[in-house]
Image (cartoon, rainbow, N blue to C red; front, side, top):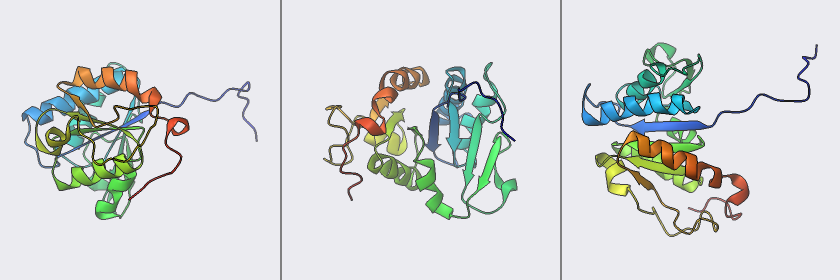
Length: 199
């Protein structure tokens, strides 16, 4: 059975991965930033992807549900294990990957990636996102986000049309939204260096 669509398809909302420390404490500076970011992302029409667990991931998902524009399905969690019940309570779509840290590769395939603090797991997601030519934004000064803000991971040319390509620094969640609006249209496959990922 065919469903009439009048020749149109629903518009696809861009996905933004929010990555960071799974063990950050409630009301820590990074946790509050991630929660505000989650709200602003959904306010601005983005869908949020996380690793589905606690800390920064939970804060972003919780903030998403506090948005006045929240819709069911706005938060997606790609879990490292096999158990759906391990997801934080604010995840709408739970995908247990069973890939352990390998799920970071999937998280990094979002349209854009925003790092908030973070340790080694976050660093791996940043590296994947860099190799796969995603827009990367570092929010705040803590963790790997702070260390890599306004830096290039290596000297590869990911986009010939973006000479200042880098991990962009954002001092606050509002700046993240500004950068997404301005830069995400530039970070598309048609603009990428055609040589593909390089190790």
